[in-house]
Structure formats: structure tokens, C-alpha cells
Length: 413
Picture 1 (cartoon, rainbow, N blue to C red):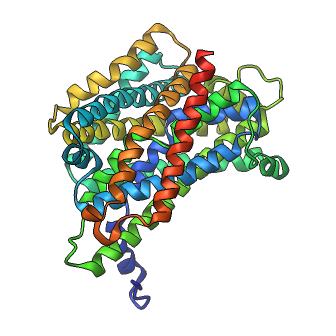
Picture 2 (tube, rainbow, N blue to C red):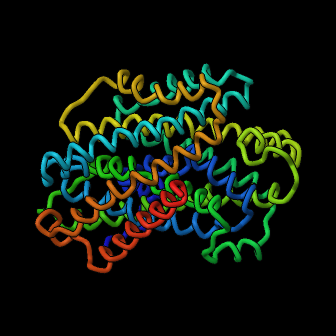
Picture 3 (cartoon, rainbow, N blue to C red):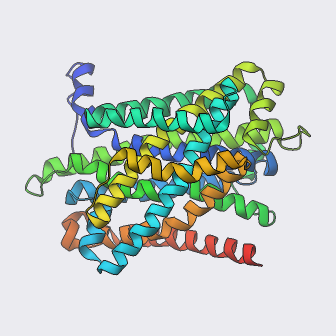
């Protein structure tokens, strides 16, 4: 067990620990992206506290999944797409790459639309122009990564902090109903619409592109097997990094649903099943400060998650097919569907919710290879999954696949 020397000044102790933290905070921003805003606020406004259990369960699943992804990169020094290319038949790995790229487009759609909507709410900027501004600022954020991964991780972590503070502030203003919250912890649905929202919440919380990305981020902290003490220390800090970062993202998601359920469910206020209506409703029920906090949090989410999504797309391409394209070209390709949505005048909130449903269908294609690889002792040695961990992760994958099957049957029926 690694014990910090408490006799050291606090500044020195932080300096020794800090380099191990950061990858999970980059991954966590995807768990508080604009798609989460759309699904969680819509769920709270239309179903009250009914789907609290979905957010809690999805966040626990995310902690498990991201911990496995981080471990894979830390122990092997290679990311999930690279290992898929090495360990799977070429047609399979190419198929995984194609679906991962489609998922990346759905991810970018949510993030660009969310950022554009935030700029519209804050500055009355036309949605297409807001989409372009979001892309430009997110690309500038990616430049930080070229100057050092720690700068990029710090900037993304700071934006997650802005989102968390904004929603904790609004939650304190809105209040809550502990009894209804406890009732929402009991698994249940109320018709097809709640099932659709639950799948969207799951897709917005367990994000396929950051399953790939987290394994890449931790390769920068990889420790050789010849130093088992340092490796155990790295893994311990990696688990703490994941717990803290995903815990913060989970609080953000719960705060969204609680605010919407407390202020808008059954209130009769029109339009609260959209983000524009939520923004207006916060100004009406609370004040302009609450609406401003919402808009700033949505903007920070859109910009940060858009940068992270583009970076994840680069990791996917390089890992699966060993190719790279300029980030600017990737940005232009992945932003195209979002710009079409914005120019066509499609309802932004509806587009965000449906993008998260698409993401939910992409989760098994990342999760199944992750479980298979992390259970292999020939790759991870004594850090291979414990059988209990493999069973738990398999149960998560089975649950997601089953939920998607029910949703598909409902849509086709």
C-alpha cells in the first residue's frame, strides 16, 4: 500500500499526486455534455423523479467501464482501438472502426448543437453561426493538447468545475423532494416515452467514444511490469481519478433531473421539455441569475465536449486503421451533420435526445471488446479482471443490449 508522507508540506504532496490525475476528468466531460442536458432535463420535466434510478445506475456503470478502459491503457501502454486492430480479424476491426466513426458524428452533433443553443440563449446568436463559433473555440481548445497533455486536461477539468458549480448553485435555489427522490430510486418505467428517455440517458452517460479515449489518455502514465510497486500506485491513483471525476459528472446529471423535476414537473409551464423552455422557465420561476448559470454551463459543456469528441475521433482512426487526418479536416467532416440540423431548423432538444439514443446503440461495440481484452492474463498479467469484475461488466453490457432491444422493438412496432 502506498502511503503519502504527511510530514511533507501540502504543496509538495499535491505536486507528487497531481500528475496521476487528469485522464478521467477529460472522459468525464463527455458524461456532462449537451446530450445529458437534453435527456436529463426532459426526463425531469416530463417524468418527475421517475428516472433517478437510471442516472444512478448509469453512473455506476460508467465508473466500472471507465476504470477498465483506464487500466487497459495504463497496463499495456496501448489503447483499446490499437488492441482491437492487433487482436481481432481485420474485417471485424474495420467494422468496429466504421461504427465508431458514426458514433463520433452523433457525438459531435450533440456537442455542436448544444454549444450553438447556449450561444443563442446567452447572446441571441443564430444557431448556425453559434455552431460555427462552437467548432472554432473547440478547435482552439485542442491546440492546448499540442502544447502538452497536462494543459489540455487542466482546461477540461476546469470546465467540468464550471458546470458542476453552476448546477449545484441552481439546485440549492430550486430545493428538492427527498421522498420523491427516494421513490425514483426504485426501478420502473411509465410507458414508451420513459423507456426512450432512459435509453437516451444511458447513451448520454455511458459514452462509447470515451471508452476508447480513456484508454489512450492513460497510456501517458503507463508503467512497465518490471516496477510492480509503481504500477500498483499508478492503478490506485487511476481508480481515484475515475471515482472523483465520474462522481462529479454524476452529481451534475442528478442535479439536472432534480432541478427539472422540482421546478417544472406538473407545473403547467409550457415548453419545459426543451432546453429553450428550461432556460426561460428558470428565469421565470427563479431569476435571471439561474438562467444565466444554465446558459454558461451549457456553453462550457458544448465547447469542452466538442474538443474531447474530436480528439477521441482521432484516437479511433489511428488505433483501428493506423491512419491520421488533419484535425481541421476531421472537424469539418464531423460537424457537417450538426450544421445540417441547425440550418434545417430541426428542434435542437429533440435532435440532442435522439443523438444520445444513437450513442446508446454504439456502447456494446466498445464495451464487449473492452471486457474481452481486460480479462486476458496474456495481455494484463496479474492485473487482468477478477472473475467478479468480468461478470459485473458482462451484466452491464447485457443490460444495455437488452434495453436497446426493447427500444428498437417499440420503435418498429
